Image (cartoon, rainbow, N blue to C red; front, side, top):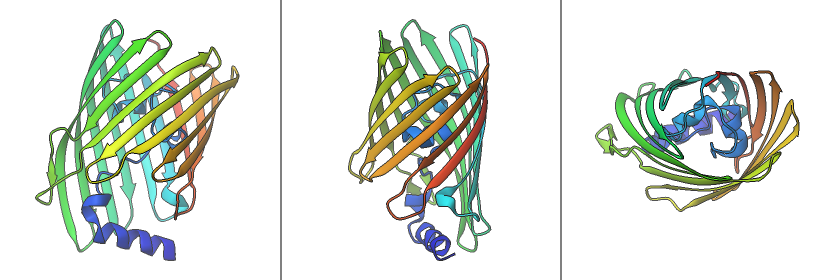
Length: 261
């Protein structure tokens, strides 16, 4: 209970820092520290609009294992020839704090290059404190060169505001290297206004055809992620957890279905 009260107080007294947190919106992102190229799934478009993975994924978690702070996510992607379409929604709910992000994205894919644009409608309410919303624009790109994939995205390139103050602009870069048919390695950087660079490393290993292991490490702040992906035909069930420097572990579970291109 004390941790929950502390978390809510941090939100209230650092409102703009808490709004639009770059939280993982699936169990895969929770395991890979937000490096979305390592394991394809529909919610990747929420991080980089140029990444389009056809399918649907539903996720649920308790942030930092606080039972009064549930977070629900649903994301879907479609592909038609060289065009990709994405819809998603993330909902963080508490009696004192509520945040909803509705996403839509469009991408174009030409040979080994992809570009995309995403729009987000962000709504935030803190009980007896404030209530506001904002429309945010994100841009992204992805390039494939043999066994290497590189992605770059800018969140809030529109420099949108909330409560008459500018929301943070976040720059994300990552590259994924296929080491073997069963394994891949990823590195990434994240930079937000007024914060230092955050370095990320992640790995994927297909232990069996039905089981994939994901793991990651993030520096600044220090965090570890781990996940298991169970594959049955086009269905996937993913469980992951991620540590935090001060709060409890965040456990995350997702259920997804991949569409055929």
